[in-house]
Length: 114
Length: 115
Image (tube, rainbow over all chains, first blue to last red):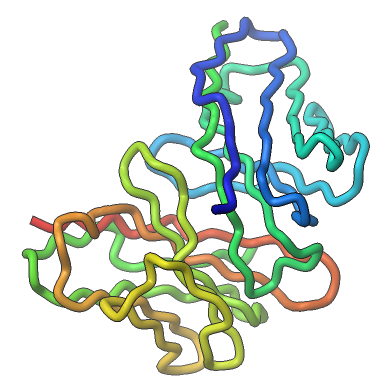
């Protein structure tokens, strides 16, 4: 059974702080990794994708991947109240995920206080 | 920006009835998907569809479920004889294709309530 595990939280950080979200996955052959943001009652929205070991930065967001440890993380710098949401880690066994299942974790709820 | 649209936004049905959830994927996308999310639970893959046939399906997608692309724009999920446990948010998604990395674009979802 392929699993994606996340700490459900809530993770509470003050405005301006760094939020660190973590995810582990069980399928060692996984090739593509994604972070989605989901506001309550809304659909998942893609924030970051990462395919190679190391760091990938996009604005205030940095995704980190360590395939040997089967670990993915998301750092949010200068956290804002508008970042308060549930962050979903998702994994696909293929580098090109077209037509195949994306396996989601249950998500970590982030709360940023002003 | 093009988006995936889903109708209706909320569907209420009685147990045992059939429902059809409708989706219009982004026009130049080739791959279509249905996911569901039971309240408080994780987003779960149901089925993917390409070139007028199912390319992958999960254990959840049993004979109760079917998908169809009845015309050039719509993509539907039919649930026959609905059960209480089918109550969930159903998300349609689409992606462009099979070259390079093609992220999923999700619609806003249909909340299905089975009473």
